Amino acid sequence: MKEKQLHAMNGMAALFLTILEWLLAFGVMIAGGIMMDEGIGFGIPLFVIGLIWVCIGWIPFLGLKILKPQEALVLTVFGKYTGTLRGEGFYCVNPFSVAVNPAAKTQLRQSGDVSSEAKTGVTVNANGTVSVASVDKKISLKIMTLNNNKQKINDCLGNPVEIGIAVIWRVKDTACAVFNVDNYKEFLSLQCDAALRNIVRLYPYDVAQNVDTTGDGEPDEGSLRGSSEIVAARIRDEIQSRVSEAGLEVIEARITYLAYAPEIAAVMLQRQQASAIIDARKMIVDGAVGMVEMALEKLSADGVVVLDDERRAAMVSNLLVVLCGNKDTQPVVNSGSLY
Image (cartoon, rainbow, N blue to C red; front, side):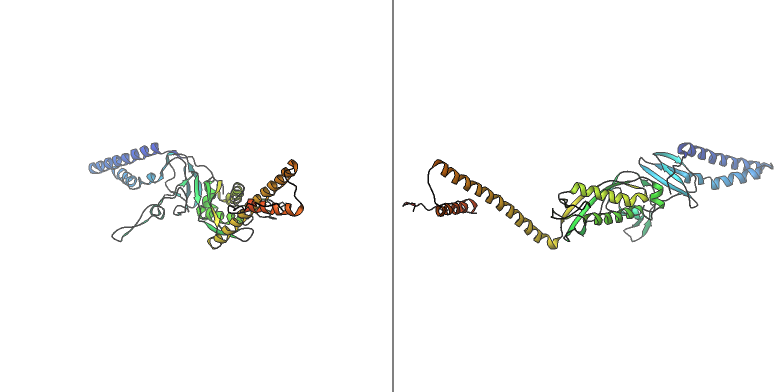
């Protein structure tokens, strides 16, 4: 079902016209009563007509609707969809029109949701009595943010990670949102969870070897931690493909929380520390070897000293110990012969 816009008459004009007709009905009823007292034959019909209108004259007031900016009303008459009222202003529609919004009572972790009292329409007073408040059936057309709960999902390597996303969305087609799904807010929330699981399981938490995240059959360096923009874009596209039928538009999706699950967080931290230590040691060794080569070449070029293979190996060993050690070395001064 597609949305069709309802063109309603000006509410202020309808209000004044209804009040004027009601006052006229009072006048007709009074005039009919006077005619009845004077014995005029038209008195009884006039009095009856005026009385009937006074009794039912409040019905047109039910068709008066007020909309604020970025709000809409989906209206039905006796179960038939008649149109959507959009745009701020004061309107008058069919008094038998009923506003439909199945998500009016739904409260999620998102902007646009108010207190549970206003959504549920039920208030428990201090004395224990229960009062029922009216539920606003207007549909917000504003851009809203849905912040779903964090989920525990296994990445492509089987490591459990916790991830949370924020989805920026809005209602694009009110008729689809109301009639194509049971509750468009809950539908969006569930589809966000499903899309998040489908995308996260394609990526490792950190860069891993021989992992294809793009589906082209070639290993790449995609990861949840390093490719957050790409992952977020794929999540947005996945959610949009799922909620288009509900008349919703997903503007953006962002990863708001990403971490290893608590049961493996300590182990993964040790793994990251070990990887960092290995990388640092590699850099130290590469630098030390270069410095030793430079020292030997400099000594040989300047003719400072001529070393045989055994003394060269001892010198290389000593220099590597000095350059690669974690602590400051204590030199031993040889005051005798070199040999």
